[in-house]
Amino acid sequence: LLHFWLFLGISLAALLGNGLILSAVACDQHLHTPRDFFLLHLSLTDLGCICTTVPKAMHNSLWATTTISYTGCAAQLFFFVFFITTELSLLTIMCYDRYVAICKPLHYRTLRGSRACAHMAAAAWASGFLHALLHTANIFSLPLCQGNALGQFLCEIPHILKLSCSHSGYFREVGLIVFTAGLAFGCFIFIVFSYVQIFRAVLRIPSEQGRHKAFSTCLPHLAVVSLFFSSGILSNLKPPSVSSPSLDLTVSVLYSVVPSALNPLIYSLRNQELRDAIRKMMTGCFSGGIKHLFSCV
Image (cartoon, rainbow, N blue to C red; front, side, top):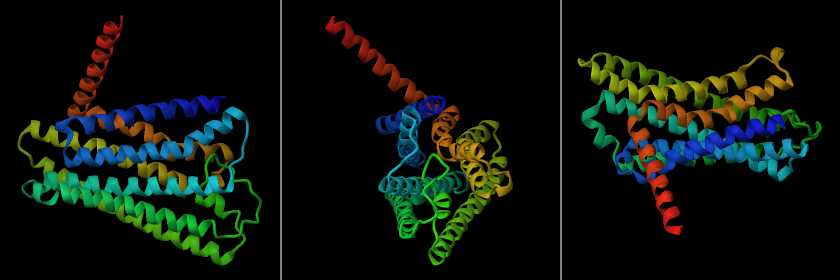
């Protein structure tokens, strides 16, 4: 029951926060900018991560079961890798957006037009799909003969790989993991390099108000990136000597569930336009509901 209520609270927070961002960006004309366009897609990936992992965990906790079907495990792995990879691509693209906006403002409209944004978003989703398809097809083509206990609340690649007894398939999947880690590290280096250039440009802005506005658009994204990479690194690079079932569960929740609930809060804290749009939308819905109630009475 404790696991059920914990997962329920996190999932409701994620659904509410990301749902408000999606509605505000879609309905408010002032939020139809490249930054908010990619924020909308980021909210979609957060909702996808929550809906892929949490419902099954809540079902198992509530009904005291620990089973998942073979096809269900394959589907969960595919969609989880799909949304996580897409989120990494989107975070990298959003970093590039901030870099162009602050370091090359005169070229911003040319480099970040609606067509270019649509192509980048499509590339992020396509890369996530191909990456997830490669891993899922390879993992579930391996003979699994080392039992059927994952020791985790979701189907993850390392835990499924431990059940395999195929050496060739094992090394093939390890090669894919190394390739994935290289791409993730490349994205991390690109983000760090971009933010070094961004902060150098911001510190050269003469007015304090201009510096504050520039920092307010960058700090939420930097916080989300830090949360994403720190939780992923903690999950995948922790030494085996400190591994335990409860620690593995906590770390998996930290990188697979918690960021989806915290991202909307982080972005709305420093984005005044987004807060105003959400407030206006909620006020309009509340006022409309009150008018409808009185008209029914």
